[in-house]
Image (cartoon, rainbow, N blue to C red):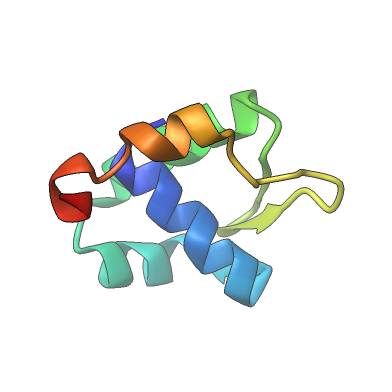
Length: 78
């Protein structure tokens, strides 16, 4: 999972639903980049894409394994 996907999940944990245009503004990236990230997240069954936006799947557990968290932001943790 890349940084953009993680940021999208972080935003969705707070808002539950967000429009694609809002994600573009908040993450400072193109609609194409957001669309590709949302497709990857949907394929992992973490989100559901809805016309114009995205929502978290209610039963999705987005608490990541320790091994994944240990590898993220290594430079910041030192």
